[in-house]
Image 1 (cartoon, rainbow, N blue to C red):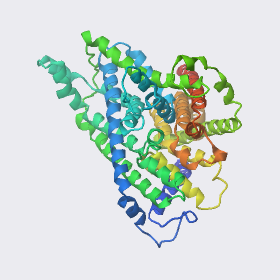
Image 2: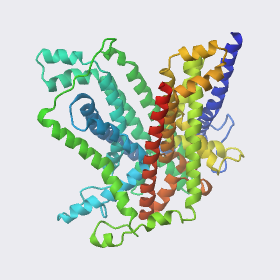
Image 3: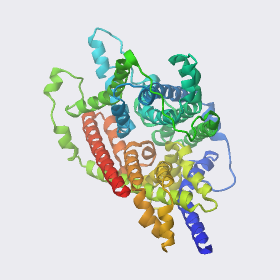
Image 4: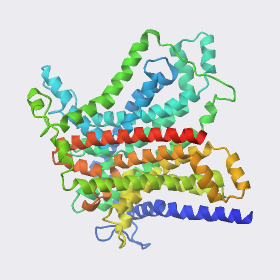
Length: 570
């Protein structure tokens, strides 16, 4: 028995070291350097002297700081509101009403996950560019002289960000709606209250913790967003905190590391404060709990004559969020140079951009880097996440909560700040990692661990212990039980997590934007460079190819996961 306990402690310590060193030390370097007078040749000063607040004084005394703060808050609030209007409304229609297309809608809400933020921003720029945007050109054709939309504005930025975040609101609020006992609503109806009165006086009050928690989480995600503000606002001079960090580190010459570090720490503090508030709100949700051990069934509201209106709302959301952006990319992919739709442009359409993709000298090395990175990160994250969840949930050694806290540290740090932290760390001492793909791989691995553990925690939590106990009674060791019994049972969760992190690796640009070099070019950065060079058709062809590839991978993986689940049940 003592030997088993010792082995659990050894496993816990080994995993804490494996995860804790890369999760804690690089952010520590960022915090340390933000209080030091750093320069290009001296990025890390380990001495206990020379601490200063000068970096923060310079950042906060700059008039641009207040402007950036205003842009950041406006963008975060706006994107949160858009996500709530669409994601929250559709969640209510799907979970609590008899709106048409409910089952189809649930599946469609996962589709935006496939499209990276950079492609979402580019596609909407093609749609609402004030001079050449497809929607604005249609507006001009009606006789108007001023654009209907302006892609290079904060409202346009938070509109696009909000649409991208709407599926998350849908999933989180939908789960809260499914878990809510409708008995209080039934009592209100019996007492004579109408549907609208019941919704505002009962339903929304019961959902208060969920609504507040989702709002805070979406606000934090808006604060740390990078891709959409970068594509739609950076060149137009609309800077938020995340793009300011990129500017001072990558665009400014010479790099102003002090200001970059100060903006990073400010963003980290704002995001950590938001997440702490989120946890406090969620932890107080028990006061609003109505679900008991009794069986219940959510009340389905009959929309009556409003059913077609609800169906139209869902269809409009799908068209605006998914169809229009994809069609804009598809249209540009067939052109020799970007043109708005016209008879003349149709005459120039061809498949040449798709053929030219694989003939570009720099494409195949970039593609190899991207797929290598995505595969290593997705598989590696799930392997490490499995060990973490197994230790925390199944082995339960004393001190396992420390491991859980360490794993979630990257979730509290914006991705752009993580990229900067790893840059500082690997530039502070001679090593073979910097200027290679591995620095991006390491940063992504640590960043996606909180996501991976959500899948593995859920998989382990659903397992009952009878089979594992039987294997242990038969003489199997803890590693044998993990390999022969536990892993086959949670395989559907592992497959789903691997797929999701694989797609995230293709989507996230902010980390790679600070760490890439010509030798470690990956797809989001490659497409951004093509975009800035004006090669819109090539971006369109790559985007369409990527979306189709990601969709096929998703479908095949889902079928494989379902088949494995059936085999496990048998």
